[in-house]
Image (cartoon, rainbow, N blue to C red; front, side):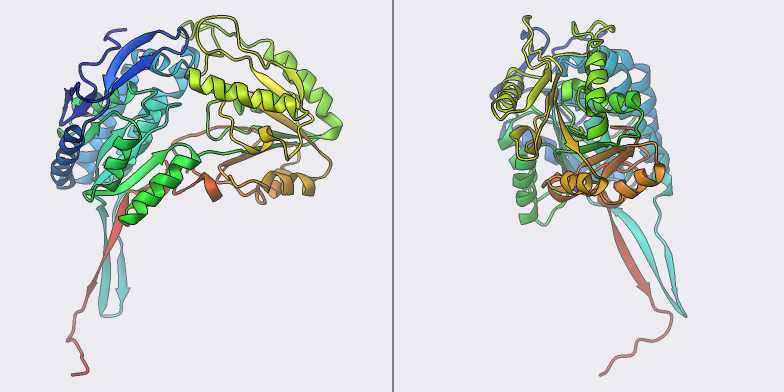
Length: 485
């Protein structure tokens, strides 16, 4: 790497690193070894105040620029991020434990795509003219103001950019709080934006736990809150934001279904199940962890899947040959081990995996359960680890009804060679981000987000613009005003 893992300060505010050691220690632990690789400090009230004041000042300056000028800053940042993809990917691997094989293609690359996309879109963010005979109305798209982003630990670079890019393109400023588990990557995003020409204070990063997030969410200067996290956290943040009538985007969890019909290509369905359950060691909110397989092909599917899982290369995440890495933290590993124990206790058939590996770090084997029923804990609750539940089904109607029988609604997938059935089934699945003969693709051009308890609002695509801006309408009367008195 070309820079130290230990940053120059815990926070990035007003275009520079800032430290306040009065804040609680945040140890940064490398998931592959369990060793501490850096130490940061949570934001004190003074740090939070400094960040919000900087954002408020910078936002006023930023909003005065033309949209094209704002877009140029974002596209420059995208180019810088792409040039430094290797170093940023190594840092992401240290931050999360995810294999470098993955971070090289799925993290800073996705972040740079978002910056580039919204940078290009910025100049097109216009209003409209509405003719009303002699009179007319025109609309103006305006920024919201100071926005708060709260990130999850699974994609720290990507999430920071997915929130910053549309927010900044619309003329807002942001204070971003990463997860305390993965606090390093967002600092580099802030550095790059400054280098690309963003005004000091436009994108600030403050570290901390729940109380720091609460201080940001409830501050009256904040107009919008965007959270990526768990459903319980989302409920708390949503309620706190609602008290101040703030705009919100909630990208929360899921227990997403993947339906594999008996005419599906087994290798494609197996590949989708692997991407939807074991990429990032299963730590992806949209994962299709309830894999409904039509009874006629269940055993063939399980046999092919088990064979492919033998090809997983479990090892040092910094070795590009490694394709499956550790869990992000000891706490997360312990939680997932508890789900595996419940699966066995409740009668699911353990097809493969289920054990912790005898090595340093927090490694769990890719785990597949079969003969899972809808009432089992592993079929109802979000696990967020490398655990797949395979459930049998007979008919299309049955599969749809059971797939929808969840409070979540983030994603859904269908594997079939009958495209009519593929579209028909997806049309009946209650989820926001769906796939036919694929799984977990997330291009910036497509909206991403859920329904039901999986969240509100959308990230990415043109749809995100509506969530990071507001419309002002202006009625223009050309003649005299008529009044009753």
